[in-house]
Length: 109
Image (cartoon, rainbow, N blue to C red; front, side, top):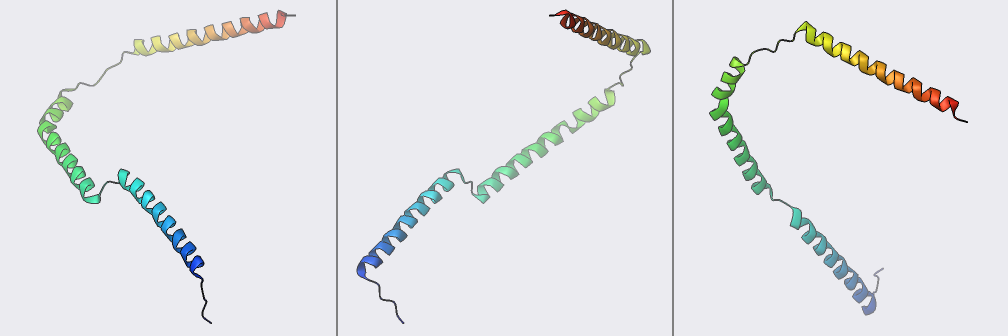
């Protein structure tokens, strides 16, 4: 039960295989243009990590000094009361404007 192929069928099959191979080569070329090799990525990543560690080590003393010297922020009760009153006045003004607009719209023919 051997299948006999004609020369034309074999040429068509080979042509399809070659076209498929060409398409595959183009796809591989397109992917390799944006691909970063793993070892180059690891070298870059380790260099960045090394730089970050060096920066942290040189500035650790400065950061601890700043944190120790930072004073807590104290807020006066009068400041809080002023913010609350301002918020209430603002909301009241918005409500007043909304009521006025509704009355004007209701009077329109």
